[in-house]
Image (cartoon, rainbow, N blue to C red; front, side, top):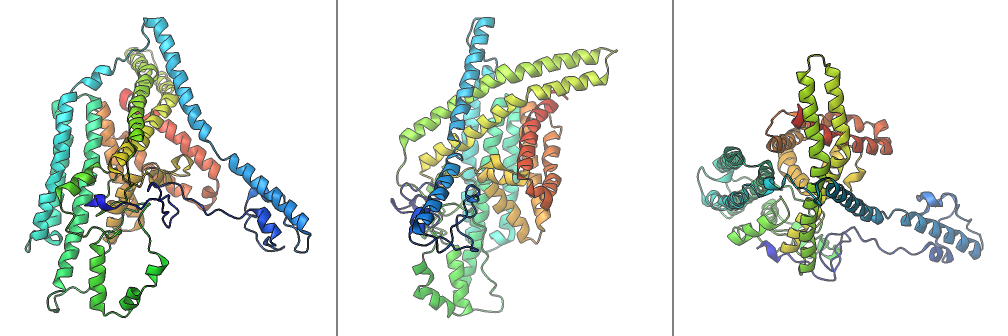
Length: 547
């Protein structure tokens, strides 16, 4: 089972991850010897040589002393460098701004409560609450059935694996699986439309369906590749003939988990490697095929993973890319699980307050004004454009808050809670996307699980069929844009294509921002990223609701 992959406590991996708790954390750097100690030991770089400290901007005003300088001069210079470096590091800690963010939201809620108490006599008014309770029991039952139906991939794969005829994966197995997945997706996406669910239930179910579709696709296609690899390995046990394929073993793209074990120097130079170098091409091929069938940690080998328990564990893990085995933490923290669960409900509450107080009133008012403007024969189209522009500007800040709350709910709390439940060790679900310089960088860093899936099963798969990098990137954006348009259609019950067009427009913008001169303007690119991000959210809402 995949649950056997546990990191040993108290051991750091080769990437500098903290092996004490087995959780992927920022890379721990080796404690460097202080500049003062280096200076006293005569280790400062001589004049003309580039010191290891010369790259720090805070030290450029402190030139290195000459080689024949007295030890006191070297020590003073080194102390100045060290103090400047520490000062610069202290200014890079923005943890307090995270606290300020929550304090600001608390002030927003208290202000809204006081205003509602004065106007209506109640602290808060949740007009949208019936939408959350509508269809809730049907949603729960259908969602369980949807999740359980993905398990059909397991008996289907056992059929592909055991077949010696047309149903082998490399023959018709892949086509049968693709047809099944397309029918599965069409049925579950259509169900909320047929049942006329509320938009809240439909959006949740659609997002959950898309996530499980990606999980099912990864499970089926990776195991399909392994079944073909196993067939090749067993074919080598028979007498080798002209029809026996002797091409190199196909390496399936890995999911790039942060805690994959790395070979130690001792293992790199072991006797097995010397034997491998002296082996025949047949032995070399057999070893490569066997390695492909084994997990990187060496505890699980295909087809031992084809069990219901392994599949259920994979469904609960916060990842969209199937692997034979995942790194695990030794224990789970129930206190951490409690706080993350509580944070989910707190963020949902804040999103409801933001929507009720700052988004819905603006949209309702704009709809009434546009309706009155359209009914007035003396009005000009400029009046409608001004109303639309005012609506977009009024929604800028509320949608920025909503976007940040949605990000925290999904990537920090929900995925973190499931990682705690399953003891999933790789907790890096996002990177510093707020420093993005273009949309391609943002797509890589703000949603790492989805990015890993698209890179493994869309981009890399396209490259394997000799598709160019540009076309493979465009195909990846196209599929992502279709999924985003589907979600917007579920929210507004309108399929206008605004979200699809705006997302596909990111491709030429990325090409422009990757030009050498433009790429150097880091601050300008980050400012443009945030401007387009904030404006795009409110613009999409106004387009779908008002147009």
